[in-house]
Image 1: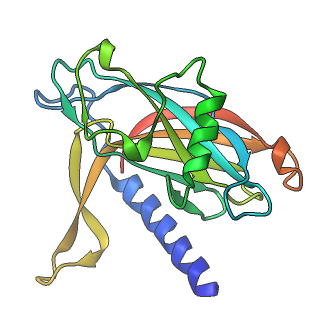
Image 2 (image 1 turned 135 degrees about the vertical axis):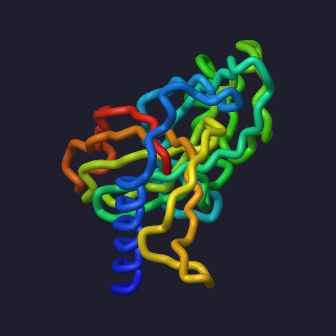
Length: 212
């Protein structure tokens, strides 16, 4: 258990070091760079009792809307993670039963009748407002003691950068190259008593684009 904690802490610290030394996204995109238009809802929680479970399990999700106004169809290979200030990094979609998506879809069917699950979205976003996609991203419940979370979503842009790894060398003794993608970072603070998880409230703090 100690090894797991130290290993996770090491990943987070290394991520912070890489992000601190990483370049910023371009103010003026290159001629071949594109970024999708993104809007998003406030993250919410939902409790679902799935097949074979005696009690309900809690999940968190966010709905994002993507519109491609780049003038061309673009490839879509997303990666989304939730990171807490208590050293948890949780990939989206990990061990999420389909019943959870179905319950979320029912909850929002009046506003988002064509809601899609992130992991099932086609690998190409077609150009134009008529092809706008409403997508839900889901995580299992995270540490109740967390006071801050960040949501990182990559794949919304094709802008990339390469930097030297701060510690790891390749077989020739040169710094290993680290490939970064333009990533949307959403930050939230968490209020409420950790013992009353159903009352936990997220407060939006910030949105920014980073290279990660």
